[in-house]
Amino acid sequence: MSKLNTGLVCAVVAIAGLAGGASADLTNEVFVLSAQVGGQNGSFMATLEDGYFDNDGNFFWTLDSEIEIQGDNGDVLATLSGASLIVMQDPVISMNFNVQAANQNTIFSVHSGLLSFAQIASPIGAASAGVTVTDINGNGATLSPDGSSIYASQYNGNYPNGTPFADLLNSAVSAGAFQTGSASDEYPGGGNFVSIGVPVDSMSAAWTFTLSPYDVASGTSTFVVIPNPAGASLLGLAGLAACRRRR
Image (cartoon, rainbow, N blue to C red; front, side, top):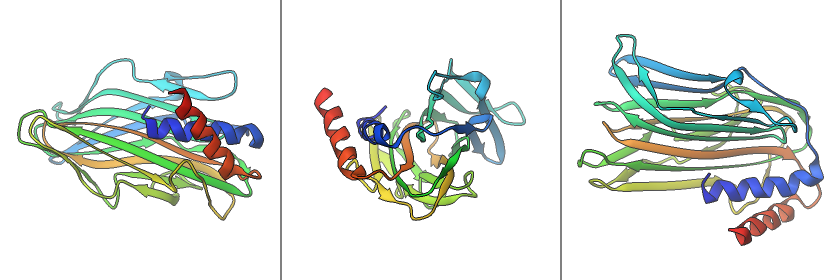
């Protein structure tokens, strides 16, 4: 987990101590990755059975081994070398992935499942995302949005049919020959939370991007929606500061 996302999760823990947990449900398809190359499509899906719930009702899944994403004709379209998902019933969705493109520009989409919970009448939210791209064959690497942004977080519905909360990483990320480039983004930023303004009962998150041939990209993100306790902003900042002191 990146420092950016670790700070946000720490802030959530600080606030959740006052807000309390809420019963939550997660769709069976918890993590779905799709790859498209030259008209060919392939996908990988993790389900609830592939992960586990802890005693507090939080869900954890980690990819066991590298997966080759194959198209309809059997060609390898992409490689998924690492991935994980953490879903906390506070609620929080945290995602992580590492992919490699095929011999052409490869369009990726990485979706979480839909997390549903008892309606939060006065919610606050925050989102953060970080990405890296690495050139493998010496001609530079580019990771660009397939749409308006590389990362999207939504509430009250499953992506892409929910209500947008934060679209992050709106510009391409590049790297020179055999180099790595990175970028990060967050909303509202600084470990703070922002009022959503309407009741919320579900949330989801997704990555959609195009990766240059043979190159490697990784991403990590956190999306949080919780009740608005008194002094939430100050608690969030205090939690973030405490985590930074521990690192």
